[in-house]
Length: 362
Ligand SMILES: Nc1ncnc2c1ncn2[C@@H]1O[C@H](COP(=O)(O)OP(=O)(O)OP(=O)(O)O)[C@@H](O)[C@H]1O
Ligand SMILES: [Mg+2]
Image 1 (cartoon, rainbow, N blue to C red):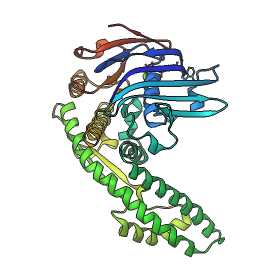
Image 2: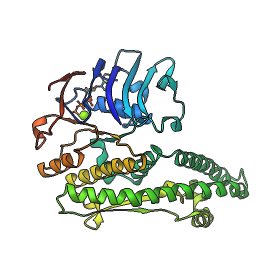
Image 3: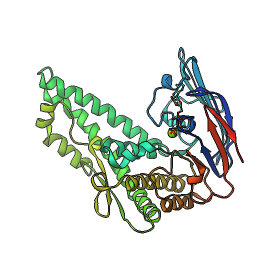
Image 4: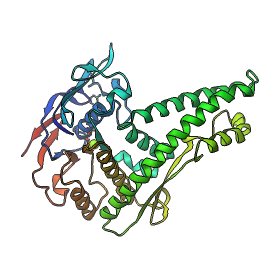
């Protein structure tokens, strides 16, 4: 997957800009607050249908404008495609591919695939478990329609069950109303957990290998899945066994929404013992694993969007990451100073970002 054009109109601090990235490494440099992250956000939003920083469309409309448009021309296995996202304060959002409306998450699949790394990914390692679940969910969702279906169904059951738990506590409903819901929850929940565990088995190994390379073999990353219930039967039993506690707290305590991805560095929890640079290296390794995994699953390289790659990483690690990225993928990389990249990547295209404009330098 490659983007040959990216156009932004009234998106964040861009009035109107068109960028023509090259097929390999594209380096966007500029001072703070000039629009580097905004550019990558636009590309990622277009690909997955939501903002990587979880912004609402209205937040991304340039101050004073009444809507925005983001458009990309891509070249993938399926040929050339044009994807467009527009938003108007009155009228809402419209996402299209080759003129056809993309309404649901599943319509987005198989189009533009990207892997987005941002400074915020530090929380992938150092933050709460929901961040790691979301990472896995979004990664699998980019390649599997079935998974999106199971996840959506599970969350619907979960919301209903949590509402019922509160009503039962207030004696407005009998406990027996839970039975049918829990059947569905156990079935869909087990599908979600099984798929996550299977994917993490493969992607975790890829991340561990990437980390070994990034750290020059000095540290070991460990990734494992810790489900709150291992299979459908365990989930059904768990729901029943903890019902008393759940009724008291008014919320469901077992199921994939409580699963955890464990990340260790040299055998210790990375969240508690990792340095900033080590946690960033681990987060980047997960993103590199996401890329390799998607590539293996789909036969196609996703576009790598790497925001602020070099902060907190020593030159050795920066170099290792650039070496890992060299090759066939298209990469968008942002930095404040291209001089901080260890060895100028060959055949890179350089752009300067200044107050919402992008100039090609060489
Ligand atoms: N809706 C909006 N309208 C206008 N400007 C906006 C909007 N949203 C964000 N901005 C501005 O866009 C600017 C650029 O932000 P961006 O995050 O892309 O900077 P950056 O080049 O990545 O900087 P840094 O090096 O600090 O990460 C900021 O000054 C921000 O205030
Ligand atoms: Mg930025």
